[in-house]
Image (cartoon, rainbow, N blue to C red; front, side, top):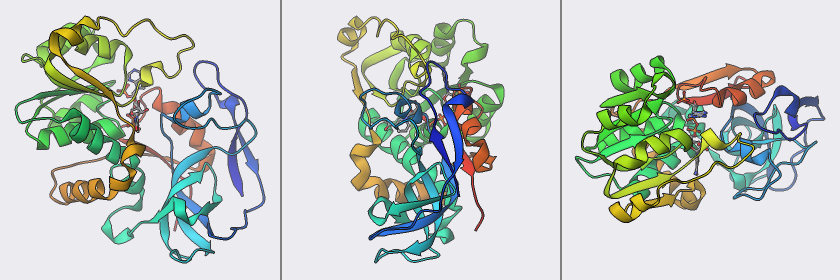
Length: 333
Ligand code: NDP
């Protein structure tokens, strides 16, 4: 069976040389474990952090070892009481065709409720991130202006729509005209800015937010944060979810700039980590699936076919190749 291992640690942007596809014996599930055949593997921006040998909220991966990933798969063999062969499960797996996984790290997915791949996207970790990051930390109120960066991605697209459902005016930033059209024509954003085609981002955001910004859901950091910052209103909330613009940086940028803005506005900047809410993810999935059923919440998936193409899918996140949740289709069931 095939699996990807970390071949070397990237410096700056990751390259194909950092990954190695190896053939190994199919694992035997131990006590309390199940053997899972991967159907879908997730690639996520946080994985860039795991490739680095630095202290973070998650342990780094070791060179020469398999890389971890959220997966959806079919159980082939089970040594656990509450999971049976044939079940579809999701949880912490590997960049691999097969993995032996502790049943405590898995939950079953009901294929009747919708495409099983959504357990890695809108009804999975990114959906929960959007839900708790926006509603608990951002706390949008009707009439607020909410700005979200990487708005056409897995987290951002859900944030924007939840803000709209909560009665806010929603503005997104994203990196292509196709994404901008999706945000405004399909997802109901009030305005969207293609930051790659905009010379003066500060003016573009100001024009899109004539009443200032009450919630800035930050997925990106860097220049987009600099552009939004001067527009923060009194008592604005800034959930800091991701800083993807900086993940490949080899030196830390200067900043954050102009913290006096926080004195002026008494705005609150707060980090959000989806793991903190893990006991409540079910609540998020229940509400998000209801919004999907009622056609209030739309989602997209960008599926790369084949485990051998998983590094391309991952590297594409940093190029903005994905609209919606980026997945790798590894197997069929
Ligand atoms: P996305 O689906 O949003 O994919 C990443 C997107 O980021 C790309 O499509 C691209 O879109 C944008 N991007 C990439 N590089 C840059 C850059 N240099 N400048 C601006 N935009 C860039 O990923 P997710 O939805 O999974 O994650 C979004 C963010 O949320 C990430 O920062 C991630 O680390 C974070 N996150 C945090 C969690 C937490 O618990 N704190 C949990 C999950 C995610 P574009 O075309 O717009 O450039």
